[in-house]
Length: 389
Ligand SMILES: *Cc1c(COP(=O)(O)O)cnc(C)c1O
Image (tube, rainbow, N blue to C red; front, side, top):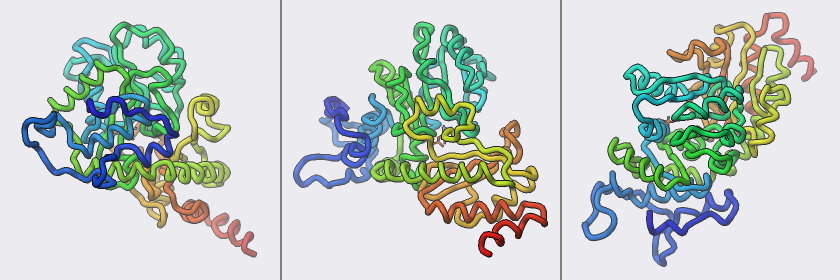
């Protein structure tokens, strides 16, 4: 890493994504290749890959670090990065966690509480006053914004500006926003984490995670946690993540534009009772989103009229949209989140749609025909037929 210390982003994020993490030496491969090596010939800084990194995952760290505005530490998955942050929490601490957040993070926090390592306090994502109070007593303040899957936007800037208990860590799960839409370190967070499995990889073909911080001590601690847990990214995964990152800005821009179109149409659809998307004026945290995010993202959550059966039928009848979990990929994916064990607290008929880069009208046609099947007999045929005369 020392060699890259002077390497800081001076160009726009879109250009950085394409150009960072490459060797400049004449004759070097244009793309840093996967380096399948556990160990290296002694005498240089690299000895063993778990401790000293491979060139491939250092390229990923350079790219993400430049985007987030700090030093990045790459991990085997988003959860591995998150676990390394939780590993910093000392016994007897208080962890403040959003009431809506990635299920794996909630699981990790609850498991730690069950082992009496810390106590967890859950706070509503948009209850800024409660978060500000938590900054006074919590040792780990964990924000996720926009939240998964309810897409509530936290006032990250206001919470980061609040006085913090000495030694406390304020972390932001930046996966839904991506570093292109939000830079938590600039807003005052100590660490920003990404599931690179999602938008950075962007093709549903890898698991990887990244934690980025400006704090040199925290960076060393995260690297140590990675080393001791063996939570290192695979070289092929790092290679694929770097390749995905090259087109990330284009993919996000396209999918985000489409998400805005689909969210507006879903909001007006007779078979949809509620649409959650931070870009909608009707969204309860739309104003914070406008102020804080460069774009509103690619995820939409909407409730289907007719309950669980109708929602499952929509999932069964989409064709272009894949009935699959996860998000942030080239292809659109959709699932009913309350169907997942442990997620029964979510609205039962809510579908989470991750919008991909397909044609917006093709996506709408797919969604609309699946939604119409759930309508009562009388209204099924009439509306579309009338338009096509
Ligand atoms: C997917 C996801 C994670 C976990 O990342 P993995 O790469 O699957 O381990 C964490 N936070 C959010 C918001 C996610 O969407």
